[in-house]
Image (cartoon, rainbow, N blue to C red; front, side, top):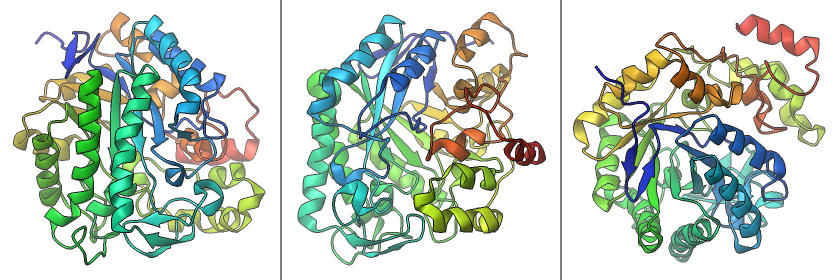
Length: 408
């Protein structure tokens, strides 16, 4: 069978030069809620490395949606800096996408600038912080903020937006029965729990149509635990996303505040994570160092780890589906594309080597990424920046190498 990998693909109004997308994995390369030269250089290197589209990760649609200082707050003040990045990406022949979303209950007053809000009132152990359930008026205004974010993305030169509706972020918090305990029109039945998602996507699609931008949605096939969304209900949500008219769905899984490694798979080095956390977070640092392996459920890594579940969605949906999850070889990518998926997303393989796509093109079916999934990049991602242990520009202490060796 002739390979589709390096054939162009029409994603709504956007033509991609091949079937690869750099997924919206958090780079942790921003500063003061804006972009940096480091962020630009990384995405330009991925574009130069042959990717069809590279996606800047997690841009909050408003101030309350920020969980880290290094995240982007998508607002008019940073348009010139973002335009500099998209121009440089386009110069390398790749399309530029940006993921937009709101973190909901996964933040603090110091970052969000207000008391943290979510689908329901409660306490988030992941942050940890108390959370206030959103008012009806806030649901309406936040949905409009998603639309405004699309307009800002267009002014910044982006070709596409990816709406983050998974992983336990705000839209996902409304969808999941684990975090949505509301008794109004936004809670209870699945139709009610989808209401906020519908509002956000309607605003996004209306704005995107004005500028001929592609719209994709990151969606949870399952949350990763019993009280969360399961596959049958998730398929119904995906059908609603399709009905609304988006150009594609990114199929993922996992819940950052409950089952984080269900998203990424692999055995995260918890002592390494603790090492890079700032001392201002000393309670979490100490707990993670001594009890991390008990607190975070670990998953063994295998290539194409979401494929079995993703195929269930392929049978039920007609729109383009974007596969993400454990792609580290030409063989794995071809397997996914030949299974009926139109596009593939990757992150860790491109952290290890931004030129991975060009090497796939120049190589053969035996081409494989140098990423060995010891997840050092994930362990330091939220505290420093996302870098691979094999090409990190700073000294890595021996005690970290010792933990990484055990994982390998």
